[in-house]
Length: 338
Ligand code: F6P
Ligand code: MN
Image (cartoon, rainbow, N blue to C red; front, side):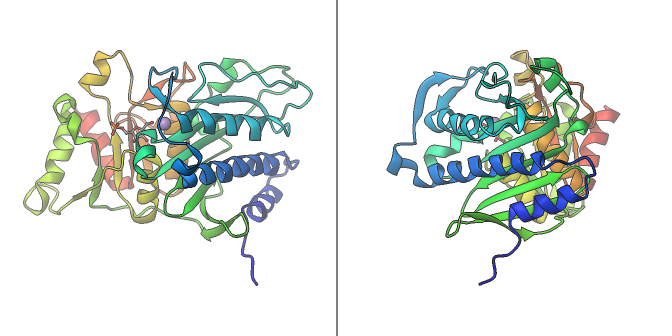
């Protein structure tokens, strides 16, 4: 029987086109895929292995952690720190950068990840996901510092996510090499290439935003959504549909498959908390923006390109407007006119 193109086949092939490649990148992607397969298995078994519910702890953002938040973070640490492909690790679930135990086994990459995004959906059996971003580690440095992680999104070597839904799907964007989708074949435990060079449709009639925040929105967001809701009779001249999964990974995946716009904008409630956005820049907004841009879409804060933001903290937050280019352009124009 035919196997198809595995994730490993694809990465090795991609690496051949990079003159400086040593095989370490293939190894790193392999470590990530092992972590994602393990997480897929745990999410899938859920209550059968006592994985649902809260962990009675809080993360650095002050959010109550789910048992799966804690366990999936441990899975990432185990899978990523043994083989010497990374020099450091940042995770949504850890306050500081994770110190690699064995200095002799340090690789040339830094990994930033959200091991389990959308965790409010875990207990209700709705899709969740893993998000990751890969940047280069500084050369010849014994131990990377926090500053070494604080690179602009444009510096990402690769980014991806794994969606744990009806199928487990790993989506990978290696810089300059488009966006590919791999579906996990559980029978033989491999991610198989199922969609090549994914492109987001430029036009869309579907938006995603948490409307319960409407009273806190800024004027440009209010205007945009109001015009969408006016449908055919309004200035946009078309009827829009709305979706809100509350799992960014599922949201971005839908947009890659059939277009759409996803927004978690800055609003008065977020500002009152002294925050600069809801979603995290380094392991949510940046990797998703690289994926979306490489698939022909756009990603801004409403005001500027996300990938060009200058980060100052590993857990920093940013407003997010991403998806089909034509719609993101409208929202960004409304902000910059205002
Ligand atoms: O970690 C952030 C996240 O879980 C995203 O996946 C999702 O888009 C968002 O939070 C959901 O936010 P809300 O709780 O406002 O619906
Ligand atoms: Mn998250």
